[in-house]
Amino acid sequence: MLSSVRTAVIGMGVLGNVYAETYRSSPNADLVVACDLDPGRAKAAGERHGCRYTTDINEIAADGTIDLVAVATPDFAHRDACVAMLRAGKHVMVEKPLATTLGDAQAITDAAKESGVRLMVDFQNRWNPLFIQAKQLIDAGELGDPVMAYARLSNTRSLPTESLSWASKSGPEWFLFPHLLDLLCWLFDQRPQSVVAYGARGILAAQGIDVYDAIQAQVRFEKAFATVETSWILPTTWGSGIDFRFDILGSAGKIDINPSSSGLLLASSERLSTPGVGGIQHAYGTQFGFFKEPILHFLECVRLDRDPIITSEDGIANVRLIEAIRTSLESGGKEISV
Image (spheres, rainbow, N blue to C red):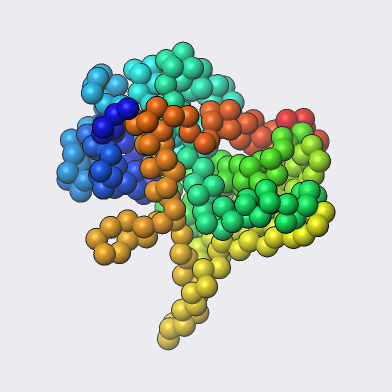
């Protein structure tokens, strides 16, 4: 057992700073270094969190005192950082998805197995109180056997056009579907068998971001099925910034989950909106929200030498399912085995 886990964070965007702040405030962790390719961002993170900073991941790999590394780079750039850290004997927690190709995902999981260290994908919504409650109700038999589900998660178009400089290297299927698909597999406790998917392009492509605008897919499981949809073209006036819905019908009951409705309604002289209450909040000089809970979970797994709830196989399965959806999209809607 480690008395304190020495940590590093690679990628100092919004979520990278969530990792850093969680480590910095935990009595069981010591934040050693923050890393970002952008020198200004790396320096700002180091100053904000009171730690060393660098632009070179090799410096972290070579530091034998570091136990755990969080990789919060853009989703298409996970492989090199993860493999380098794992081969250096560091435990790794990586933002979802594990990777944006099955080959990259396999290379990461192989590196973890070869080094004998722990690897966990950060599927934050498994710690979302709404979905924890849903999982407990399903497991208690309140719904009977799952029959079908409908789930959607979309962003306003300002996210790919203004917030993500690397949006053209990703897409809503990689940025948003990982949440929905992991939740489906977890809540159903079943393996997906096949997918059929359709998509639309053109709106974002006209702005120089050649990705899917919207995608809808049907996933067939062993004993159930689900329709999932995602998009990056919600109007910027959409009140909460996201459109998140999850409904499950079982043989004996039904659950409706609406995470994008916070219960908070704002009416001002200029607008009517429902400000989002998500997984990251700050008040009283500290960080709140369920986003930090999986970070603390993996930290304790490393400290106490335990296996995490989310396995590397969960990460691989998630990427495999998204790749099947993309194959169906590119085939014009053919059914693709998973």
